[in-house]
Image (cartoon, rainbow, N blue to C red; front, side, top):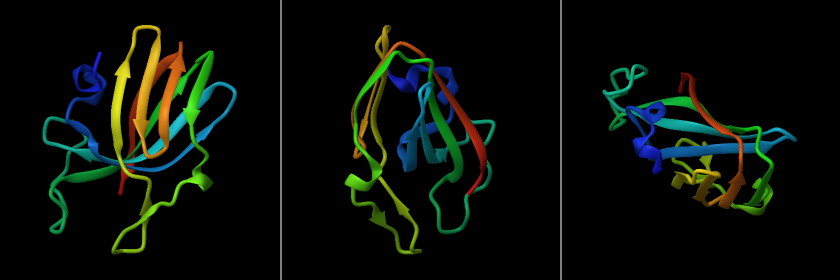
Length: 126
């Protein structure tokens, strides 16, 4: 299933969101995001004057997986430096629930995740 059909992403545009960082542990892969939030989301607020939509910090978490492959180390990727001096690692270009895990890709790599669950949570305003 393509990510846009998953109700946990109602009002969220991952292709317009920015990956701020990622990290793994034995049981989790976490992408820290500046999520693009649209009026369909319960987290939506009026955008700032220089923004085309609302942006909020969020976490995309894959937990309980058996294996992950294809994830690049953050130090291997040159981040984009924004006009305000902040940096990001692009957007999530593709996210799919494959039925036996997940496939997610972007500048961080083309990542295959076997098993586990996916969670998405808005954590705070930007």
